[in-house]
Structures are given as structure tokens and as C-alpha cells.
Length: 132
Image 1 (cartoon, rainbow, N blue to C red):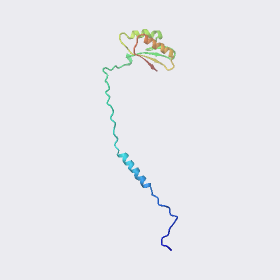
Image 2 (cartoon, rainbow, N blue to C red; image 1 turned 135 degrees about the vertical axis):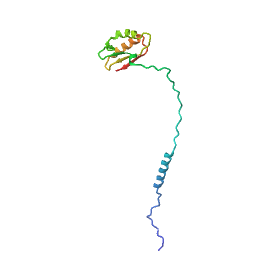
Image 3 (cartoon, rainbow, N blue to C red; image 1 turned 90 degrees about the vertical axis):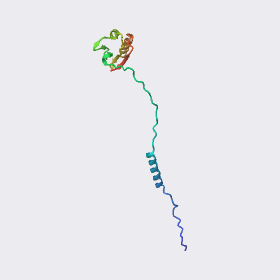
Image 4 (tube, one colour; image 1 turned 45 degrees about the vertical axis):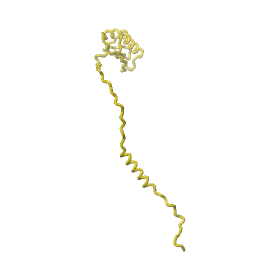
């Protein structure tokens, strides 16, 4: 009998890839952690400074309120749509005062539009709509 026996059932040798994958992940983590990110330099924007700032107090604004029941109020008094124009002309003597027209949620839009038109027709330049 021969000294070397040939065994036919042995599987061919395989290369175990697990340690190589572990090394790749460790290297990947190392490079991610040690990477220096470059900050992009943006443009410097020179913002203009206000020459004169205007502070608007509640007392410097003319306010009209259009209520849900169809009234036009100024300082708690019902003046109606026809009273808006004369009130604006009376209060805006020689200066441009901001005017705000407030309307309650369920107020009539047509009445609000009429009040706004009266304010503009009376000569107000700085008119704002303010929902209430």
C-alpha cells in the first residue's frame, strides 16, 4: 500500500474574508474621523444702516375697526363709512400718518373695501389692512 492516501471528499481551501472586511471598516472610520472639512468662505455683505428709524406707536396710527355686525368704529365710536373721510382729513393735517383698517373675522368684506377706499380717497398714503 502506498503511503499517501488521496482523499476525494476534501473541499478546496477557501479564503476567509471577514478579517479583511473588518480592516476596511476600521480604516474607513479612521479616515472619516480624521478628515478636516474645509469651510467655504462666503461673500461679505455690507448691509446699509438706517439713517433715521421711525418708531410707530399705537398713538401715532389712525385705526378703524369694521365689526361683524357692519359698524365702522373709531376709538369706540360708530362713525359709519361716510364718517371715515372727514375723520382722516381732520386727523392728517400737514403730515402723513399711517392708517390701519382692522376687520373682525366674520366682518363683511364689501364694507371693509368701502372703508379702505374712503381712506385712500381722503388722501392717506400709508394704509394697512390688519386682520383681527
